[in-house]
Length: 191
Image (tube, rainbow, N blue to C red; front, side):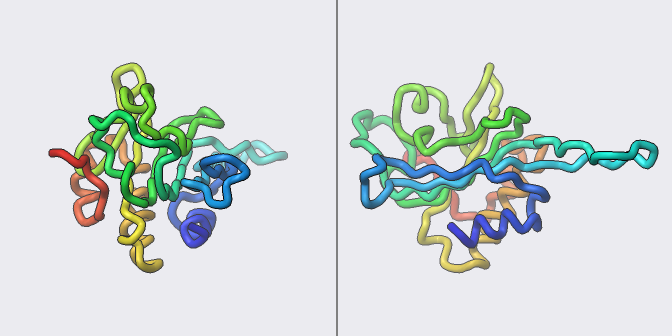
């Protein structure tokens, strides 16, 4: 997770990043958390006006990124009809929201099979999952089994480059079939 976070902070993939903090799942007294997340804002620095002087303009938020290492569920899954592959397999979840709302990002709890989450998360195709808002997909993510990421090369190939391409895409659902074609994304258990 540290290698992933360092690569994101390097600005090689997303440009300026602002740390929104991290999150652990489970109780604070737990020796081991069931998941761990990093959250960040993706920023764009406005062009400097040759006429205006003084302070540079504030960066503009383009969206948020979330990286979650999910080891297991917080609670036992009661609804056996939930068709989410991350419920029984350790994975890296890479999520994003193209939003200028400052604290609008995925949280570990969003991936638990609770009523609102089950009603909202949908497989958009090609290993891309989404959360709709007002009938349109609003937030996206894909997940990769932890053991598919054997080294830094795999991290860049299967996580960072596809995330960057989908984040930059006007239509992530349409782009997913090509972008995620060679990525070992987690698919619905039943097809």
